[in-house]
Each structure stands twice: as structure tokens, then as C-alpha cells.
Length: 202
Image (cartoon, rainbow, N blue to C red):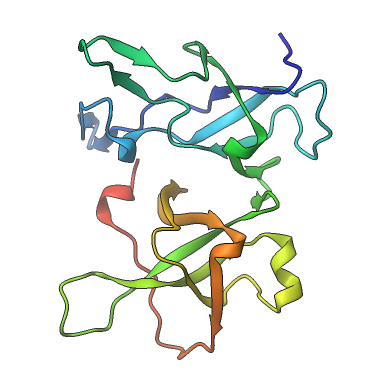
């Protein structure tokens, strides 16, 4: 099966990451199919599009949009699949629904136009927020950002409502468009990465 313009992919494990191990038992964390937090974003490429020149390869692990594997209910309460659905193990996605890839477990690389930022813990004693707003550490970088003297590990600021929460290797990451990175800070050397407990073990 090959598509002219779409990538054919399959979930890396399951469509949803809503269980965690407690001893030798599987604990279900969530049963709501519409909750995007527990929708898997990890996939594997099965076939490349015929009409698109791409650096991606068959077998690459990829990070995709949270709606690709998501189920939902229509106004009549009937369960539906996303428009990407072909069958339980086969989905078709556009290139702009793919944000990052990992080839042969050599580490995550972003596609042009996207980057991943790790949130940091808030050091403000006058707020109950656990993470610092609109600031994070550049983790997986769009190569095009190098011309702005930005490197992985830099402390950066980003525009409001530009970040999408992902879990990669049990770590919360914010995926965003590269042009939403608006400032590079000098590190104070006291920034601490933030990771929510719910992300661990998903």
C-alpha cells in the first residue's frame, strides 16, 4: 500500500498510552477516549509518499499530531476514528503532521519548522504554578535556528499559546513552530527541568 501524498504509518505500540505498571499489574490511568493527554503520538513509517521528496525513511520512529490515533464521539454519541484511520494498525498522515523522527535509535531529530522545548520549574514563591511560563530549555532543535545562534541546551522564550504538550521518552516536551521562539536568555545556572509525574511510565 502506497499513497501519492501521504505517509502510511502504524502506532509504535498502541493508539493510547493510558496504562502504567504497578508491580506486575497494569493500572488504567484514564478511560476517556477523547482526552488528548493519553493519546499516543509515537508511530513508525510503513510507506513513503510517491510524490514527495523527503529525508524520512521506512522504519523511522516518528512523533505525530495528537489527533492521528485519537477516537471521538459525534453528536449522536457514536464512536469515530480520525480522518487518518485506515485500520487499527494503518494510518495516513500529511508531512506537516510529523514533527520529529528517530532513526535506528540514534536520537530525536526535528523536521524543519518545528522544535521541542523542555519546561523548567518555577522559582516564583508567589504562585502555585509548578513550571515557569513561556520559558524552557531547547531540547530538540530545528537546524534552521542555528543561524540565530540558538543551540540545544539554551534557555529560550516562546509566544503564548504556541506550545503543544507531548511526552517523549517519559519526559514532557513542548512542541512548537520554530518561529514561535522569540528570545534567547543567558542561563542563570539554576534552572531545573520540570516533569509531571503523570508523564512518567506512559
